[in-house]
Length: 151
Image 1 (tube, rainbow, N blue to C red):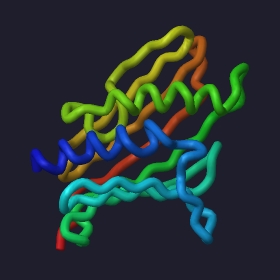
Image 2: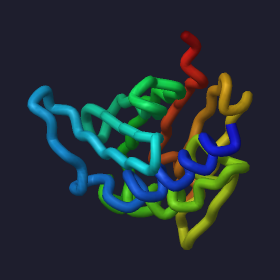
Image 3: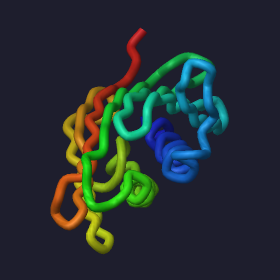
Image 4: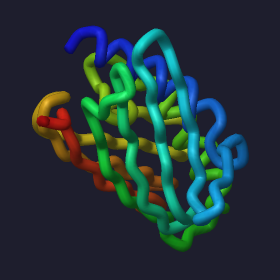
């Protein structure tokens, strides 16, 4: 479990947080995909859409799925662009840690932006929500859930 958590932190920091929104591989079905491999672990984040989106992260060990997280989110109309929201989001997601493994930290503030992430459960079985505010107005939300894949 400890190795899975450490791998997830590396994978998340090296995929969407670093290369999301324009660094993804485009698939024939319209999906955007980011991948990361280290040793026997392989991580795949595949999602559809941009402003309103839905996706799934999966971790494989020795080519067998062992963990997954589903998510969906959207931006709301605001005084700032969707691009600015996603630039801030990527800064938050780079702060992923073994303590906050699913997305970003519980709270983060930068200028007029504020990020909140609340989750319940653990890496085995969890759910949560992240929200971004700009000048105290909600401009983005994402809901997620997942856990270990049981065979």
